[in-house]
Each structure stands twice: as structure tokens, then as C-alpha cells.
Image (tube, rainbow, N blue to C red; front, side, top):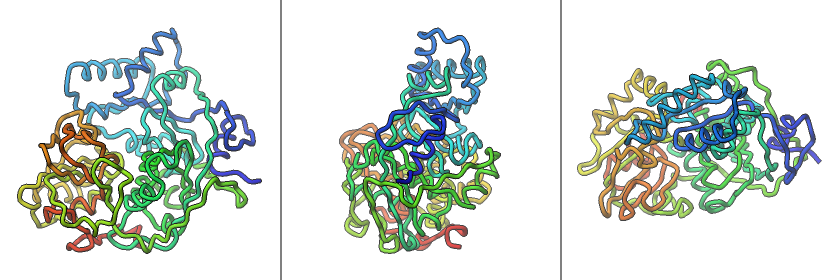
Length: 430
């Protein structure tokens, strides 16, 4: 019996063993990430264990993204401790405004195909877009990684998801993951890996592939993996990553479930208030009035997401009574958007374009506080009650294109029904 991508990567990092789902292995880690919301426990554990030398610290990134900028003294002091620790032990530091952990790690060229990458955030599944095994861990686990460069893993079962055909203009990876959430339910892939494949995946640009892998966290996935291709290699090479070690599943690999989706039949999707798996076609809820629109976060704050929004809003104004916030995923994304005129287009349309960071998504910085009965349409990853600071308001989820179309009209809107809503990236359309 052959092996899945997850089994191959973990087996290789566990001394070249042949492993299967359910096996427990101690595997070498290639790169690690610690963000500020989990730094306290990690640094305390290092101190508690009395670790003098941290040989893996140089392959660990400290990212100041959740409390960005710090909203209170405790967060500011955590940032100071992280800066001092990184300086003392040689860790990589991404400071306030540099961007969200899941964007700056691949942008920084810190890992490559075939690697094991761990981070203190569930959306570390994002790294699977580059054919790496990426998964979330706790801060105390991260302290052990910095000391030893190793961590134990239970090898996950794998679900195969094949996306046949092509996504139609106005439909994005966000709509694919929302479709899967509606089908499997939140936590429907709990502690399983997902392998995405098929012609629709091959046609996606890297930005959309990152959304696909990132949003698997809402399914409960341990990892989400794509096979590498020339797009992957070119993207990594341009950012100085090590030479790739691509990994493909065997033809006779064993999967716990196989899911086939005809991508050409998918329409834009939305997740209704309070539940990420209460998913319907946007056409079913187009009369829903909104007061807030949010484009950004680690799920949909990349350059192509901002391009989707700008294609719809350039030369127009958002609807009266609607407030719109845009948070690019990194400083590099912000600068690229500025060079392309995207920041100007969105600002002129009435949106506020903020510095890169996670604070708005999880309501740490307080930049998007909703009123009672307010409705938000967001490209973020979660719509739990109270996530934006007010349990009496509602959050709906959709693609960046759906969010921008809705901001334009004041109602949840199918992006295919407005000018610019069927924009496609040149590489994805090729």
C-alpha cells in the first residue's frame, strides 16, 4: 500500500521510516513560528526548564501580529520580551506592521516543499499550499521545538479532495472551502490531513492556493497539502527559499475519504451568522442588509484578494451607511497594492486601508467594533458570536469579491452581478 503526502513527509522527518495513519513519530522540524498571543507561555516554559542553549531558535520566527499595534501595556510588554528574546537567541523577528505570521513566513523564504513547519496558530495549515506539512501547536510545544528541533506527531488520516473542471469568474478558493464546510461541517476533518488536487487547483494562483490551505483549519484539519508545480517552485525561488523537495502521494495511497467536486458548478458562497458551516449560495441571501465590510486577515488579505475588491470598487463609492476596513496580510502586500493603485482605489471608494496584522480579525485592537444588530460581511475565517466585540451583532463570511460587491450595494451581493466582479488574475486565467 502506498503513502499519502502527509505520511511521506512525516516518515522522512522521522528518520526515513515508512509510517501510516495512527502511528506516533518524533520528527525533525524545519521551521517554527511563535506569535505574540502565545508567546507568554512559550517564554515562561523555556525559563522554567532552564534551557541555556536554544539551537533551533535561529530557525524560529517571532511574529508580532495579533496585538498589532499593542492595545494595552501588557501586550506592549510582551512585545518587548519577544524582541529581547529574539535578539538574545538569534530568532527571526517580524515586528508590528510587518504582517500576519502565515503570510510573512512563506514571503521570507523560510521553508520549502517537503518541509515540516509548525506554528502557534491553527491556521499554520497555510504552509501546505507549498507542499509542506504545516500544523498548529501550543506555545509550550514551541518551547520544546526551540530546544530540540523535534516534536512528536500522530500521523493523520488523509481526505482526498479533487476539484474537477475550472472555477468560473467571480468564484474563488474561499467559495470552495465554504462549500466543504457546508458539506462536512465545522471540525468535519478533525485531526485529518486534506490533500487538494485536480484541474481547478492546478489553475489557481498561489494566493488562492494559500486560502484553500489556510481555511482548512475551520474544518479541523491537522494539515492541508497541495502537490507542488512550476507555480510553486517559481514563487518560492523568487523569495529565496531553499531548493524544493516536492512530495507526491502514491497512486495506491490509502485515504479515509474521497470527495469529488465539480468546480465549474460552484457559485459564490456565504456562511451565515454565528456558524461557519451554515453555508448557502449568495443568491439565497441577497436581500440581507449590511453595515460593515471587512477584507483581509490571514485567509483573504493577499494581493489577489485586494485586487478583487479594487476591481469592483475602483471609481465608485461604497453604499451610504456602510463602513469598510481592509487589512493587507503583510507589509509587502500593502506596498504592492500601493504600487498598483489599489490602496488609492479602495480609499477613494470609502474604505479604510490599515496596516498589516491580525488585530481587526480577532478584535484585539478594537478597530472594528460593531453596534447592536449590525451585520458584517467579512472575508475572515470565522464568524463566531462576539468575535468582533459585540455578541448582539452578526458576522457573515464570503470571498473578498463578495465582500466588496456587498459594500458597494449595501446588501449581500453576488459579485458576478456587479461590474468588475468577475475579475481574474492573469496567471489563474491563463
